[in-house]
Structures are given as C-alpha cells and as structure tokens.
Image (tube, rainbow, N blue to C red; front, side):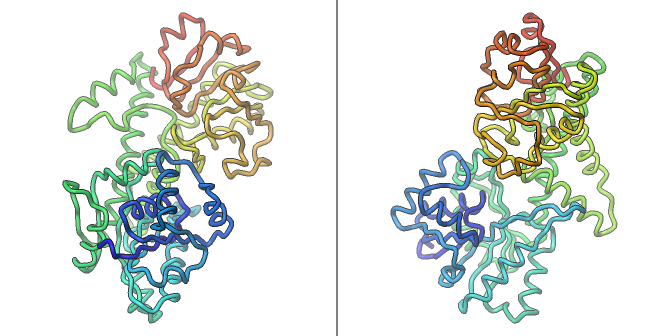
Length: 436
C-alpha cells in the first residue's frame, strides 16, 4: 500500500491539508493540488493558510523528506492512484449544499488523466451525490477514468491532526468492496471500527452525526431557557444528565449556540434533503430555530440592562467560532456583531488568535464602528458592558477586579458561562450567563 500515490484536491483547505500532510507522514507519496496559485506559492515559502495544532511540524517534515508536495497544476495528479476530494460545499440561500466544487473537481480530474483512479469524496455532500457523480461521469464518457468512493471526514478544528491519528471510526461507501477496503486500509489504525457500506449510508452517517450534535446543543440551550425562568442552574442540570452513560456529557454545555463551518451548514443541508423528498424535519428545524434564539438572547440581555444600545460601547471577547482555532467562518460572533451595529452600538473586539477582520478574511468595510484591541482589558476599558462569545482558556484566568474597574458599568454578559456568579456578585459585577 505504501507504493500507492495519493492526490488531494483542495489540498490547502482545512481538511485537505491535514489529510495530505498526515498521509505523507504515513509514508505515501502525496500531491496536494489547489487552484489558488497564491496560496500554493505561500505554503512553498513556509506560510500555512491557517493554524492547526501539530500541522506545521507535519507539513515541514513531509515536505522536507519529499513525501508531500504542493502544486497548482492539476496535471500533477495524473499519475496518482487515489485522489481525495476535499473542497467546500457551502450553503446556498435555500440551505441546500452547493456541490458545484465537488462536480468541478471530479470532472477536472477525469479530463486530465488517462489511467483509472479512485476519487474519494471527503467533502460533506447530500445523500445521492456519489451516485449522481457516477452517472455524470458515465454520461460524459469518463467512467473508465474515475470511480467514486465516499469517505466522509470527522476531523474537528483545533484537534484535526490528533483526530486523524485517533479516529473514532472509518466510514467508507462504495459499490466495490475491493475499492472500499483499499481506502479504509490506507489509514485505519488497529482496533478502530470500520464500516464499509453504500454511498448513501456513508453520506447520511456524516450528516446525521452532525445534526445529532447540533440538536444536542440546542436541547441543552432549551433547558437553559427554562432554568433562567425558574431559578435553576444549567451547569448542575447538565452535569446530572451527562452522567447517564446513555447521554454522556459531551455537547451539553449551554451557551450562545453552535456555529462554524460544519454543524449549522450540515443541519441546513439535511433539512433541505428532507424537503426534497417531501418530508418534514421538525426536530432539526427546531434545533436551528433555538440556535438563532440563543444569538438573539445575548443581545436582548444587553438591552434589558442598558435600554437602548444606540451610542452604547460594548466590549466583545472572542471572534473565532470556538477556542483553539483562528476560523471565523460562520462564527456566531458575526451575526451578533451585525445586530449590535444595526442597533447603533460601537464595539471593541479582542480575540487571542485574530487581530483584524482582514486577517479573518472578512471585509473591514462591512463592520463600521468596530475597533480591534490587543488585550481583553483594553476591550473592557471605558465600555458600558462586556460580552463574552468564545470560551478561550485565557479568558478564564482574567483579573475580574481589573475588568470591573475598566468598565463604565460593571456588566458582563457571558455567552459561555465561564465564571462563577457568586464570585461576580462579591465583586459587585452584574453577571448574566446562560441558564444560570
């Protein structure tokens, strides 16, 4: 198997780069292709497009030993035996996943090679996509060059490299058991469950897993709303139900809701798939509705305490969609910031890993009245309130007395329940968490 030559399409994206670097670390000759010439030039100069723990070391090592190389020329994939498709499938306005990049990648591969290869879709795609791609190849006379395999990814941002080496399961969907076993055999550690199944099952497993996690978050946020009305403490309730092994404590932390490039997108995509076959996904639709409510709730709490937000100065801690990543794509912070700006507030923002909208890949002009600062204390200085949106470990160790002195009004709205309400009360800080 080590003689297998591997290609990656979308080789500088989050999934593609991790996949390529780790496969190269396993000893496979790996070619990571990305059409973005500038990004390819930058990584050849040692500049990675994003931060992921352990990734830079793996990339540097495998580039140096010749196992990993980068290219902007699709022809460099011609001699590979197996090509992973790791391109984006963003949400359309309808919620449906846009699979145009997947189709374009498969067609580009097929038209630029003579020998047969496996095209392994790691991108999260709607059920039926691999079957439709197979029909597309057949209709265009390209089926002799490419065979489709589904191999959904389960890498979490912030721990993607570790997840590659320690997967919870390997899922492979294919029409041929031989092809499925070839893909599974590339990187499945001993003892890890491997499910070889149909294209449709593999595609659904990925969507159902993310939809379940999103629903679990919305469930605990629904209970948190009741806690606020009846004097409960969601932290205690979460711990109590999470100790049940049938439930477990993961994804039971109440807060501002789920966001990022996966959960919300995949939930919307799955709802769209239900609609396409004439079914209703009431549970999933409710999970999405509750998530939107959580974002509005933190703004509402500010309004309850300050009245109008017009002219108010609000400090914000956290822009990334979760700690230990510099990814702001579809972060919960963005719609909250947009709503605060629309209400006339002026914002001061801090994030440990992000220093500007430009660094986050966003248009600065879209966010007027937002000032970036280099410390959480500067974010609080002279502000009417402080809003915590990302659970960065650095924020847990803040000097609360110093924060209080920096604020004009001692008001903290915490969307991540990072602090003890009693400690806040002792410091005469008005502290509003979620479900506490």
